[in-house]
Amino acid sequence: MNPTETLPKPALTSGGRLLVGGDWREAQSGKRFRTLNPATGDTLLEVAEGDAADIDLAVQAARRALEGPWGKMSASERGRLLWKLGDLVNEKAAELSQLETLDTGKAIWESSKIDVPLTADTFYYYAGAATKLEGRTIPVSGPYLNYTLREPLGIVGLIVPWNFPLLLAARKVAPSLAAGNAAILKPAEETPLSALRLGELALEAGLPPGVLNVVPGYGPTAGAALVAHPGVQGIAFTGETTTGQLIMQNAARSLKKISLELGGKSPNIVFADADLEAAVRGSIFAIFYNKGEVCTAGSRLFVEKGIHDAMLEKVIDRAQKFPQGDPFDPKTRLGAQTSEAQIEKIARYVDIGKKEGAKVVLGGEPARVGNGRGFFWKPTIFDGVTNSMTIAREEIFGPVLSVIAFEDFDKVLAEANDSFYGLSAAVWTRDIKKAHRAARTLQAGTVWINTYNLYDAASPYGGTKGSGFGRESGMQGLDFYTQTKSVWVDLS
Ligand code: NAI
Ligand code: MG
Image (cartoon, rainbow, N blue to C red; front, top):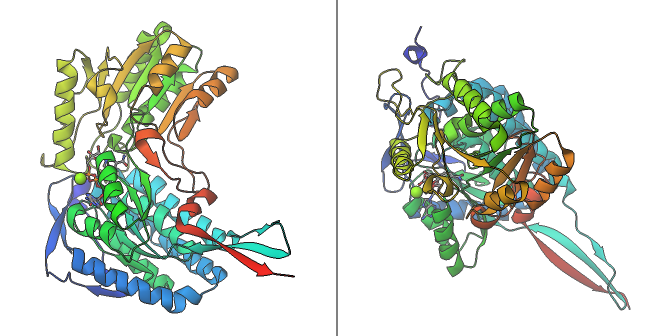
């Protein structure tokens, strides 16, 4: 059976309308836009296209929520509502995984084993964190009592991309609400469905109206309006580095606090003393997980010269067998790229790589899957890459691996750090000193040793340099959504 023949339909009781103040409405403009199934090129649903007018209504609704029951609710109660939302995500796990796979083209194996369970975990984690936000008592000079309160920012705008639509929404929604903010979530135009479903579940969990608003729409209209709105105190953004730069500029006018989780060009370094089989498996997962549409993708594979040939042979062999196909087939590990624009971008970089003298040793072209109208790209490996080539410097965001040979510990770390980005890095070695020395030297927000792409709701995540600033997940994930108030009492 061909799984696409029995494709589930997007199950949205709200019918693709946007969520403002607990109500499902059409956009003020009356416009709708299409979201596609990347595996077939077919339209899945037309969704309300929010813009500045809808963002303004959402800000008003969020303001009412803060002035109403939400602002008065105890942290414990907020925690219970978030826990309930985690439960609902788990209850609806099968349906949410399907929705995510339909909209993004990612393998159902990934959405059901990673995206959705981590989403539920994120709500559970921050449900517990709501009551752990504590102020301090400060030993000031003089007859005074000084203490701090950790307060919410107020209204926050959450702008997410299309590679992990549900999980990245949860990583922002959960901590912002745990800290007592009201939120406006702006999903990516390519993948609005799971965010809308999350809005439905939030209402079902009992979150008061206006606490979580979901306004789909385009970046330059809905997204930019959220960044510009004087009633919004903070913007948490994940996406392209150039968009992050633009948001930083635009947020300056209203002096908003911002958190930016941007692109990457992560080095994955394999030393000759590594467990080769484990390094091969890990390196494949590092680049082909979520079709390479991962900010932390291990797109620069540095291999020590002595094992270069043996490792490359094994990597090619494994990549060749990496199951690409219908995202709804449970055996598939490499689904469809999320948009046609991504296919064009990958093709452009593959051309550049060839022109600059790197050698395609696998793939390098689109793949034909199903009806032939989906956005599939074959697992692609370039050998003979140098760190100065364009394909080693710019984020491709696709299943394209650049293999770079190296000879020397210090030099490879210097090359790994010679990048505009600094999101993540990995090292493979059996030598613990080497591993920890590398971990200290690598300029990255996350370093993996003998593993890759591990995430947990409890572990902080974010970048340095061109990969942005701010940390999501863990208790540090709450910092962005809170501000400190210092209170003085005269005791004399
Ligand atoms: P993008 O950064 O433009 O989009 C991400 C989100 O930002 C979307 O919700 C979008 O609507 C919003 N946005 C866009 N312009 C905005 C603006 N002026 N003000 C406020 N919000 C705005 O990313 P895009 O265009 O979808 O993808 C382009 C490239 O970016 C990809 O090819 C990939 O290389 C990279 N990318 C990297 C991601 C990462 O996590 N590292 C995630 C998504 C894209
Ligand atoms: Mg863009």
